[in-house]
Length: 277
Image (tube, rainbow, N blue to C red; front, top):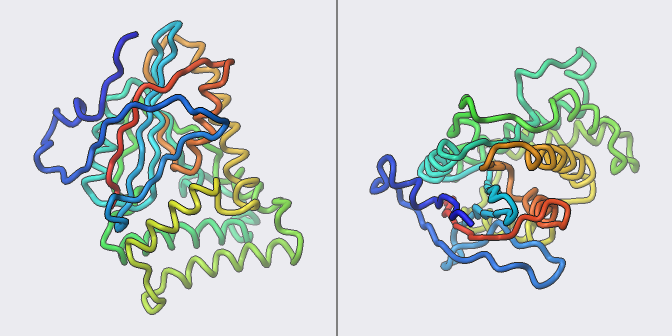
């Protein structure tokens, strides 16, 4: 099989010496059980976070897929390394379910679901500032011709949230407004801050469990994962030879199970780890 391009070679173009990155190349073992591999881990000292770029290849036609797991906040060098890798990848699918340019109806714009999405975006942005990090949407460029947004539109996200089955104990709209308020309050400067180590620990624990909650899984991960998996099926039948899937690390275990299934037939080749912070 043709060897896949590695992150180390991608970083050789540009100013590799300026990047304070931990890049660890290691073989990706074929899972010995039904458990998919993890895409987040703590640094050796337990004070930071690393994300994985897992590469898979299909023996019958040498197609390559990179599952590029990411977190929404990180060091500038982390996002620079991701950008360099993706810019040198043949095709890229990326996530963006809360694009402010997506149109909403008036009722959707004042709904609890939209309030929740706005609160969540504000929380992530303020969290990055507090931790001395960069917010992904401010640090990455998505205007590349080989980048394709593969995600639900904002109006679909709002509809899915407004009809989520996990919100049945109290009126759904009130709970969604509450979630949005929690995001806004959590972004306030006078709220006690998490340290980087605490935030990293929280993310790894959530990733190990496989998700944040049944509500989040059913509304976001489940529906969005199926959309990406459909595009992966289609791409695997086309003539392109290399694809990067740039999504949150929480989605990657489902993608791993999908592309390594007998239907698609990809096998793990290598894993490369980047220190996010």
